[in-house]
Length: 350
Picture (cartoon, rainbow, N blue to C red):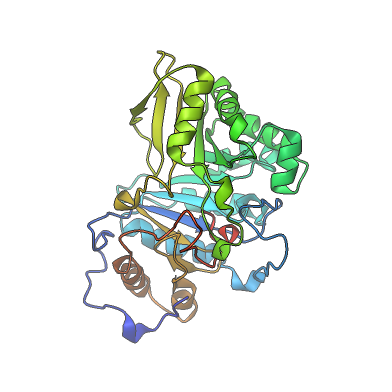
């Protein structure tokens, strides 16, 4: 993490300009981690042992998060995703959602406020979150098999997650379902996961297994690339696929539709086999205020330092521009796990 030092900031930059990096990629999407803690212990996300969690005093306060988000909105950010860890375990999350829902976006309309969750607490929180101003939630569910779920998450809570999915839909939240595709674990369920989502009118998405945590959680034998995911869904449904670009859908997913007139679609986030770095539009802010320009690298710039050392909003804008200026062409992930950043996925929210 790079500490904030005013003398090093590129003060010549027009800090009120929209965020555009050196490759002319416009940054309009911010992911904000609320905590590095989670009520699950997913095997691809978090080491079973050795995790050191941050003290509460090290986390950005709600006031600090709101201030930083307002500055980002003034720089053209339109969409803010709350992540973790698991964002719903952060005490007072409803208050934060209500605060951020009032932040005006670049055109004066409210920011598009969304969340990624494991779904466990949504049975009780989905309705209050929607009323507080949340608009969408992506819910992680890698399997429909209770035993496999227990092995992956180290928790026996698949029923609560399914109840959370249904509660989110009932509350009027737009829902997507995310599953990490793992060979020998859930690869026989890819079509079943699609059907589970389609039966609820929800869009399913598969995520390629990525090397994080210095590669220690990455098993190259478990990786399934995007082409094989498509093939498995096509074969299981007995239908060919065609690539589509759904209106109003943004982000790294690429989408395919069954070529049978049903309109059923699924997405794939193919960070490993079919890169999307050339269209990357996002930054990531950790719970402790470190701003990462790319998921695949450990370097970051501390916005918490800017705030807590008395920096002005102009200082924040300059620091953000500095981070964007250092955004790389792409990542160095390799199928062997080489190029993995040391940070844990749980610490940055994916």
